[in-house]
Amino acid sequence: MSKLQVALDEYLAVRRALGFKLRLAGRLLQRFVDFAAREGAEYITTELALAWAMEPATAQPAQWANRLGMLRRFAQYCSANDPRNAVPPADLLPHRYHRPAPYLYRDDEIKRLLAAARRLPYVTGLRPITFFTLFGLYVATGLRVNEALHLDRNDVDLVNGVLTIRGAKFGKMRYVPVHVSTQRALRRYAVLRDRLCSDLETPSFFVSERGTRLTEWCVRWTFVKLSHEIGLRGDDDSRGPRLHDLRHRLATRTLLNWYRRGVDVERHLPLLSAYLGHAHITDTYWYLTATPELLRYALRYVERSREGLRP
Image (cartoon, rainbow, N blue to C red; front, side, top):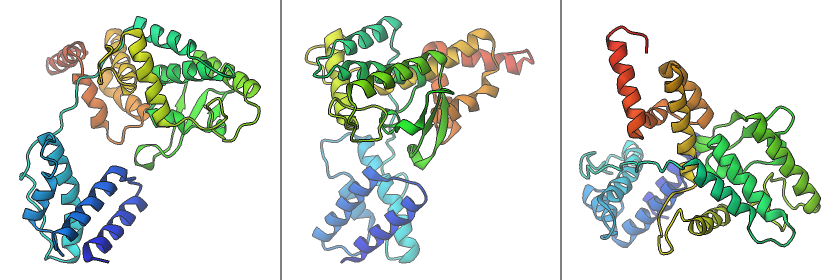
């Protein structure tokens, strides 16, 4: 086993013990180690790192920079143990990823999506109500796609209306209270699920008609199919509004409602950050510039604060 392979195994083990999942980074760094072996390299050099980062010639510059950034963190670990490993300069590939503007679903689009979910073909009758409830939960709570799919039945408190989110981003756990209407919808789904699928093979809250846990691939495929059906995407569109944009919708609508009601957004922003499960509040601050209307409210807030007026 090469020195870089040993170092990579140790590096991934240490960081994963700290709560980082590193699924993509683990795969990419393994490709780098394999690349280094083919090149006959025992140590990381700037030239080797740059050649690997830019190996997919058709990729966007931001992707090259992202690959190099992952490799730099690994190189820092290797260099601390053996200074013969070089750490590529931070500005070697200065391109940065820019978040695309979120797609903000209109109310009528949400209604069409949920109505289409109710019309999904089925065998037992469970599939339509499963996707109707699941997509409705994304709208109401802004959960990440896998956060809802990983919910087990004992994670959904149907009495108090609280979801327990386990193993979320960075391994964090949090409690997500839901509106009473969402609580009723989840309760209705649980009753129908248990009636239509009495022989469950999984503790999952949301299940397929076979009684198994829904997969992310199945949910995303169904969403894209319905998006084409209701006109959110053209017949030949491979891109368009995403499931994740339902999370953006909740965040931006919450902020807009706060501004319109005169709520002190600066003081309440940590509450939204905790609800969404952001690791850093800066991730939540991004929403203040996500739409022109929110940006105008944020600038007005800053201007009034500077003038000593109540925001």
